[in-house]
Image 1 (tube, rainbow, N blue to C red):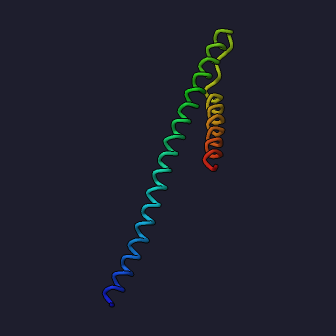
Image 2: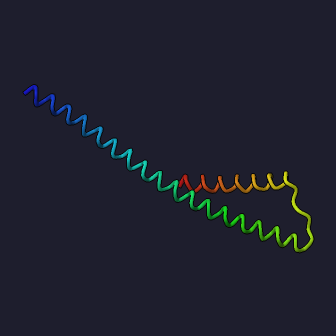
Image 3: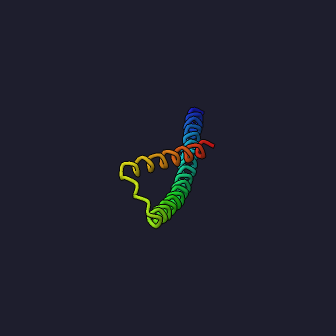
Length: 94
């Protein structure tokens, strides 16, 4: 009887550990998928922002406007990336 009771306790602990492991793997798979999805979305947004910026720069150059100074470009890009990060975090919280 003692051997059976000890075996039941061991099997119960093992089952609990397996359930916890399975849930951990499920969370990891979902997190990896979400990261992949969001990286793809950010890449699309980055490509869109880059193409719009190039078009804008070309049209400004065609109209004779002067170029934006390098330090202003950094400020603008920092603002854009901050906004994109805010949007990504807002969607990630849902």
